[in-house]
Length: 384
Image 1 (cartoon, rainbow, N blue to C red):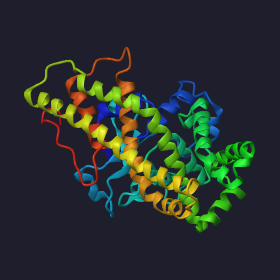
Image 2 (cartoon, rainbow, N blue to C red; image 1 turned 90 degrees about the vertical axis):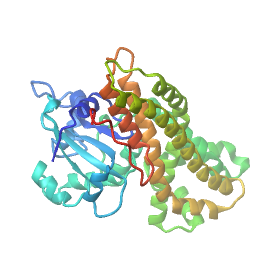
Image 3 (cartoon, rainbow, N blue to C red; image 1 turned 90 degrees about the horizontal axis):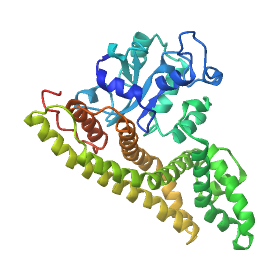
């Protein structure tokens, strides 16, 4: 299949990875063999790739909310799919790209015909691992691939060392009440050190006596506990992310209200942009409120465990976490994408946005924020 959404493809190519876009093309340009002499800038990029197939390792992977005409590509009901987009020409994106949805009907046949990847190839398993994630947040993507036995180079993940340290400190602070509960109030220094070690284990999926003891206390089977802890990690990451994101969300919501495109706009375009300003701001605020409510489910269950000594509530949370995690990741991923893409497109010195492009951007944002069973209004016919 050929994707000829050239404007969107060029914009995606120019932006960094976000919670909805894994931009391996930009990673290749920065670290790989994209120069004319074919020399690899970062040997670790070649030694520890995400994909073994070169074309896939220069692709764009997108968490894509399905349109009405795309839902029939899948046997089951789903709202968000993982879209694999491979440019026909890495240096000239106006030629378009080939694409496929992971696990669409006939997925292996499509991958063989479009990219020459045979059924059973390890790259297909990697794509399926990525498809199981609700968003492409670098922390969760890295851990999901590690769970699948893959350890790609750090250059594939846009995680700074300072972010890693801040995330670890946040998890340590969250975990400390649980460790203190286990060790007692008289051993606070030991508890702090144990919290640091336990936080490191949770972030790395490492097994250990402390984590296994918690599993036995909660009376969970190993597979239930492993999946629950992974989603617990996701909740911790999302809680940390939301706290850091709220001020940026407010700024973007205000910019959506005031941004002015260049060029002439007909009546239908003006009406669409005006409607989208109000709808987008309302949906962004509503989505953040829903994310906060879901995170409070975790906070309440954890408080009952650590403050009231009721492990049943936290056990129920771990059992329910996979289902909540998917929706939470979808919602927060959409908001993260809006903030990060807005920063990229409207950074100081960026070229002005025209009417058609602004409508495209608003449509993309609105689609990402839709709830289950909802579909966006169509663009005015001239822009569509």
